[in-house]
Amino acid sequence: MENGHLRDTADKWIATPKNTIAVLQKYDFRFKKQLGQNFLIDLHVLDKMAKAVEVGPEDICLEIGPGIGSVTQILAERAGRVIAVEIDDRLIPILQENLADYPNVEIVHRDFLKIDLVDFFREKQIDRPVKVVANLPYYITTPILMALFESGVPLHSVSVMVQEEAARRMQAKPGGKDYGALSLVVQYFCQAYIVAHVPPNCFMPRPNVGSAVIRLTRHTEPPVKVEDEGFMFGLIRAAFGQRRKTMVNSVSGSTGEVSIPKDIMTKVLEDAGLDPMVRGEALTLEQFADLSNRLSELRGQGGF
Ligand code: SAM
Figure: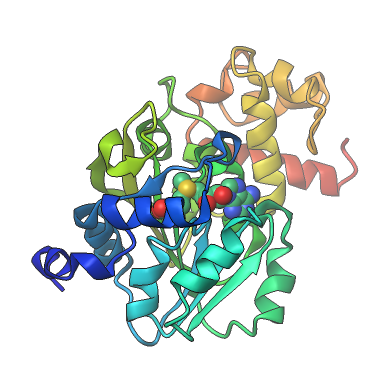
């Protein structure tokens, strides 16, 4: 469907300023800033998001944070099934009413970050890789994406609206200030490309910063071979926990799931041909994978 067609049927879509204001007034809804509530009010952007998802009748879409249903509605029109998880109890009756015409939508009142995704997929009898879609609450972009990818649940793709800065971080290469745990996790699992840049006036209320729609498509094979993925992510999180410190100091002082004695980390860096004073922010994904494999082998042999 072309963008023109969405405009031609503007009255039908929740994601217009007029229809959004009508919903807010009807329910006397007050935005909760702490939940990252910025609702989409632009049909051109809605159309771009839907195109990025490439959603069809065979698809199952999982939407995180449906709000008043602005994005959910177009997914419901095109997908076989939509599961939408919303934390704010005030939005549940609004969603139920706004989406009453779509029997293929299931609204789930949960905090997405507290869901055990493996159990959830089993409970919902999800039998194929899902297309995840979200206009993400910005304050939890990184934990949501990490939870999705690290859970190992079958994902076809993840199309998300994020802050411009988060989009840059996902695509960042070693050395710059944008490079961090999010860059490495995203690049390990997927190919990322920016579908659209979205200015603040496309939302109600307007956020203070620009946004971008980014599509993450899962690699068929990860670009590096890792013996223990969980350990590598623990190592990455420890390395960036205190990003101004050297790798040796940050991973030895880490209170996270991976903490490695200084002498062991120094030796492993040397064995890998790296400077023992190197910082995590200078290391590539290949280097993290290599260090992780060396460390998990040592750990298996009872080396620490
Ligand atoms: N999808 C809607 C849109 O595009 O207009 C709303 C997007 S708004 C940026 C983010 C939504 O995520 C809000 O509805 C908010 O209540 C919800 N949310 C925030 N934290 C959440 C969490 N932990 N789990 C589920 N939903 C959450």
